Length: 289
Image (cartoon, rainbow, N blue to C red; front, side, top):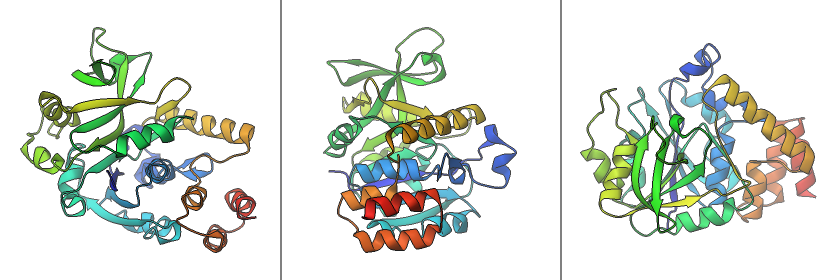
């Protein structure tokens, strides 16, 4: 069972410069909420309450203004600063004390997930006892992603990063689940030619031990990477359209916490005071009735 998770929320955001020169990308708005709310909501849907957020050096106070310690959501949030990006597996080296020999999930702070069956998929993932599990999603341009080949429905037999020839159309998303060996394996990695620790190398350690499997977002679900300006605003438009059509909010942290029975209606009222007079507060008023 996984009870801890890391949100990797550092990075330079160079593809969105000059906007990201002043503000971390994960604090920019996807429609009516900061981007960081979306990956955090996924962890909360998975019933994970202990969260480490890794941020760039010098940006800690910006995050703490928005998400101080998680008590208002019935969860525990701690932070760790990263001096500069060293690759995704560096999250496990920075978070070694936080992980403390537990199984752990990792989600990238700029990834967006949506789907009706997502909660069930997350339940299957957090129940992992040993090995590693990744979330796969079918894509139309696999040459832009790290992709996985599977057999027997969910066993991953091979991984390739941005293959030039067709290898598989199942992209590895930015949501991973690992057993307690992940820190040990991360320490064994050597930097690649670009000078970073590669998540593919870490996953391959599990694959070679026959302990890497997959879950799927499924048809009708969505996985969006908000790494570029175009993708960022496409994601914002997607959220806007869904929310306006359904009258429900995606990634409303207080609503998830309330449904999980981690907080009560008094906590919702405190959140309304915190946010002030805005559309998000109006939604909180509705769910607190």
